[in-house]
Length: 173
Ligand SMILES: [Zn+2]
Image (cartoon, rainbow, N blue to C red):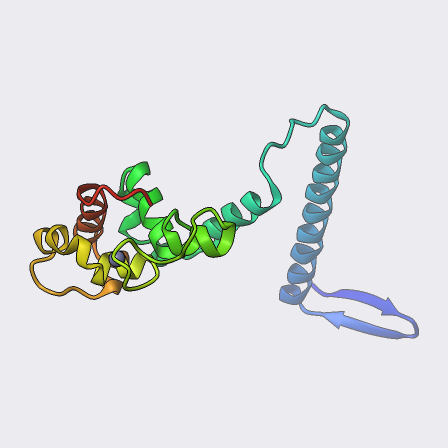
């Protein structure tokens, strides 16, 4: 079958295959238009209904969106832990915690950023790695020296050691 289309003065002939392609692409375009029109209708219907109260703050929304966009492989064992363990770990990881260094520098809520041992600022790294006041508890959990990276971002087993240490040291992070 041959189809003839008159385009301005010239006549373009299409083979059977070509014309089928054209018809199917026209059909697809029509389908898209129908879908788009339906989406617009639904959007209009939705817009006149009462909107649910949005209790999620802008920064929370950003965090949620970022977490959802993050590739699955970037999620670590942290996500399999209890809520309390997660809170402790995230505070240690981010430095947004109740240790003296942050409380003093950020909020002026402690008189000094220094740890009770007097040697350094009380940071997550200091308590996990070096504070002499916590030597005993540290050796109990980590008999051999362990990098900070492992303690904060290691396997679930490693992360559990970290939260155990925080609990046994009686620290509130
Ligand atoms: Zn200390």
